[in-house]
Structures are given as structure tokens and as C-alpha cells.
Image 1 (cartoon, rainbow, N blue to C red):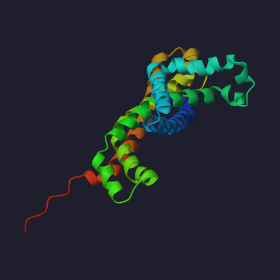
Image 2 (cartoon, rainbow, N blue to C red):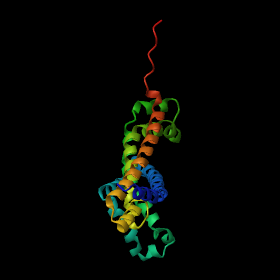
Image 3 (cartoon, rainbow, N blue to C red):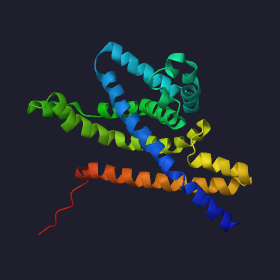
Image 4 (cartoon, helix red, strand yellow):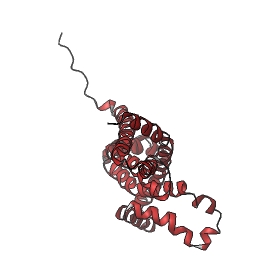
Length: 234
């Protein structure tokens, strides 16, 4: 085992970690906000909005993320109104296209996860809140949103971890994150095993940190559900 090569490889790959984290953070944040909008459209009661939301979820859950990324990165440039439009300075950047494709894809999955959390809420809890005068945005902020997010968090944690791993696809549209730098090193050194072992270790550490943070969040949201300690007999 060439430890000197492993050390230099790890140092090179670590320089690409900020790009991976930026892809992950921007795509999860943007996708989460978009998912909330899709959920609102799905449960709004408006048939047109609900149909659009169902269609969006079907398309982005039913097609491969890699194809979506290629369509955004290579496909949008084929339309003259896009190339001549105000967004072209952003859409021609590989990083922006990668974030956009990741965000659009995770929004479809996250929307269904959040909708499942909403459907898990007991109608009695909503009726109890309404009986004390809660309605509208206050009902959503104080009752529906916190309870739904707590129910959805275990499944949403899995989606977040999948998004961390999906950032590796950005290398295929020339974004030099961890996997992209690893592939470039392999083309220079022809040492596939050592380079990908270092890359896998980085992803394992990043996902471990994410899972620990989500675990702490889940415990903080569910602390009131813990059984009370038994009372001592006199």
C-alpha cells in the first residue's frame, strides 16, 4: 500500500469538498423550498394546481436524474430564446445547471415525503387546535408543519443522504467536485482503486456527519415522546 500516494490523493480530493458541500447545500435548500410549494399545490384543493403537482412528481420521480441533468445542461442551450434570455449567463454555468437539476429532482421526492407527513397527522389534533381558535397560517405554523415534519424526517433523512451521493453526477457536466477530481486523478495516474477508496472515505465521513446532525434534530423534535421515568415507591 502506497501511503504517500494515498496521502497526496486525499489532500487533493479534500480541496474539492467545498464544491461538493455547496452543491449539496444549495440543491437541498432550493429543492426543499420547491417541495413545499409542490405540496401546497397538491393539497390546495384546486384541481389544476393538484394536477400540475402530480405531473411534476411523476416526471421527476419517474426519470433518471442523469438524464434530467443532461437535458438541462445540454438541452437548454439548443433554444435561442434561452441563449438570448436574461438567465443565460447563469444557465451556461455547469455548477448552476447541476444545482438546478439536483434541486428539481429532490423536490419531486421530498414533496411526496412531506405529503406523507401531513397525512400522518391525526384529524383530532387539528380539530383540537381549531377548537381553541387556531386557523389558517397559525394552524399550519403551530400544529401541522411541526408534526408533519417530525413524521417525515426519517424518510427525508434518507433523501438528504441520497442527495449527498447524487452530487457525484455533477462531474459528468464538468463540475469538479470530489468525484470529478477523482476521475481526473485516475486519468493521470491509472490508480483506480486507491483514488476511489479515498473518495469513498470522504463521502462516508460527510454522510456520517449529516446523519448525526439529522439524528440530533429528530431527537430534539421527539423529546416529549420519551417515556417519563417511573415514579419511586415511597
